[in-house]
Image (cartoon, rainbow, N blue to C red; front, side, top):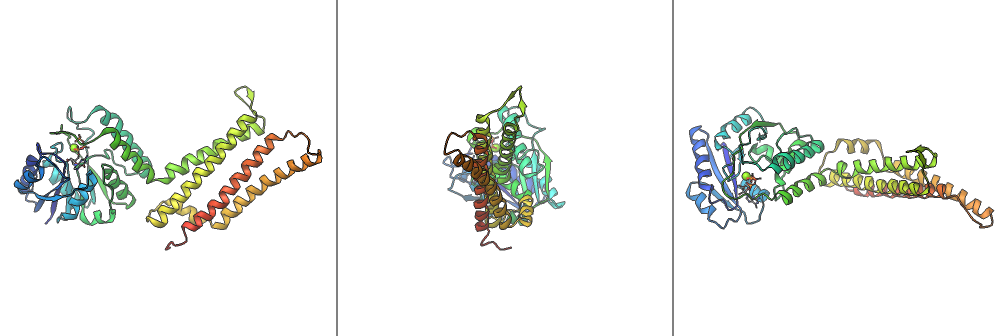
Length: 373
Ligand SMILES: Nc1nc2c(ncn2[C@@H]2O[C@H](COP(=O)(O)OP(=O)(O)OP(=O)(O)O)[C@@H](O)[C@H]2O)c(=O)[nH]1
Ligand SMILES: [Mg+2]
């Protein structure tokens, strides 16, 4: 068996018979040995029976979701190549042989690119110009897949490559998971321009909740972009604000005072916290989920626990020394009035940041205790 055409189906009675007929016809016409698998996701409109009557092998998956449906379909498929497309006639079944021949050429994952061939009425404005480009842009910024239409539902993948992806997403974010994992595994991903037609029947896509599921998925799979980048930006901004106040630099025609200094210190502290969370999240991903983040790996090679402890201790010690000087002056004045607020804020910020770095270093070390190198 060379090719399994897998069609996820949730209440698609209007289209499913025609889908199965077209899939079988194109396999027959092009002489590709194959099967049509319909992954029915608990349809209540008789889709499963209609599909079976047209000669599809029907797999039933009661757990809802686009990803759940595909995972069940993949598990049941017998082909060496797995071709994916919707049960809504929005994709052309006649394109299947082109996808197959790309796999024959050596590709491991082939994904359609609909963006230049969207038929009138096939994709709402919101998805065409906002949802799809924004989410595809973020996906590529984080994971560099190089794919233009990350949510295209027509794809083909080699069974051997699929196994290395270890897919788990249950909802529409399955489409993103597949690409992220493929990029991380360095698969040979190729794009194929295809046409996108208006779907028959009712769309199952919920613009905002499915969009959010994708975005959430992208964020939690890249701690570097979710935590470390914003954390470092806050640290730099906070330090700049503090430096401006402490050096009495004039910005926007005035000198900045205590309130700005406190704001800068808080920004520095919260930035340190966020960046620290990011390092811990990266450590968790690396040690427990087999993630490979080149940046984090380089950090790991360069820095040991003792480096972190030393850095934290030195920063905290500088802060403590400043605090001690202020306390000394205070005692010297017989516990009278003090006006060292600026230095006090700086000292407090340094002590806090030092303590954060010190204990985060230990937490990172704890996360790595049971790693296998
Ligand atoms: N959303 C969703 N789709 C499912 C589910 N189970 C199976 N499907 C099928 O997955 C495919 C994708 O859903 P569609 O509604 O076509 O989503 P879409 O292609 O992103 O959006 P359209 O452009 O409107 O078709 C269809 O064949 C559905 O029948 C499910 O639980 N949720
Ligand atoms: Mg569709």
